Image: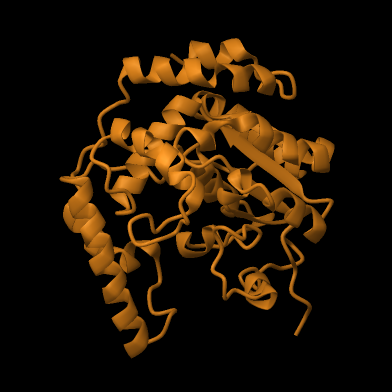
Amino acid sequence: MGKLRSPNFFIVGAAKSGTSSLWQHLKANNEVFMPADELYKEPAFFSELKKNPSMTSAEYLNIFKEATPDHKRIGEASTAYLTDPNSAKSIYSFNPEAKIIILLRNPAERAYSLYCWMVQEGYEYAGTFKKALGLEDHRVDKKIPNFFEPEYYYNYLYFRSGLYYEQVKRYLSLFKNNVLVIKFDFLKNNFHTAYSQICSFLDINTNTLSREAYNVSRDVYSPKLQFILRKINNQANKIVNKIYSPTYYSSKSSRDFILKIGLKKQKPAKLSMEVKKTLIKNYSDDLKKLSKIIDISFDDWIIDQ
């Protein structure tokens, strides 16, 4: 048996900024190997705050066991790597030559989209985005995960997790020219151009693409109901895993089947312009600093409004 190959590129975030779509398209490229199912898309091994604490190095590398010499690039897409303050150093220690891809979305839109996803997945009980923002000052000093906040710590810091400057700076300081920053709107509105740029950065050929959207949030009947369904779903999974095995579920969709009860067919309502303008104003100092280290001007974020 040959030596397992290890990742040489990472999509590190930001959460709800097109990382799932990029993962889908890159894993369809015959020169790229990425975990096939969303269950393994985000192992978060280099995030002490997010990863499964029992995951060993051997188990992490085993995720990429099917990679072959024909795969020029082996990667994963763990969005916790951008917000976790220690992930950049951990990845650099693992592979200082790794390529880093960062997708950035208008921070106000991203914060709201993250809230909608957290509600959909049953991790957020706050009934409105405004209430969730109001809880942030309380949550920042809490030990998370816990019973009421069972997900990744920074996913509950909707505003703070969108302060991009320090997050991006950590990667640029370590990986230099091996970092590519792409704006979400550019990826969305100029998809083929952006994707070609990403393939060029990874030194791979561009594959034939579809324009299907991935990981689109759905509206729910009630955030509190969805929160309860998540608890029931997790207990059901524990029972199934005891009877069968931890690898019984073949996909995230099958694992989280109970959550589907609380989902509506339509997408969540759009973020109100009033809240969006207030958030962008609060983000302005951080975005101005960010514009000095990457090729996205402060005005580009204002245009998004």
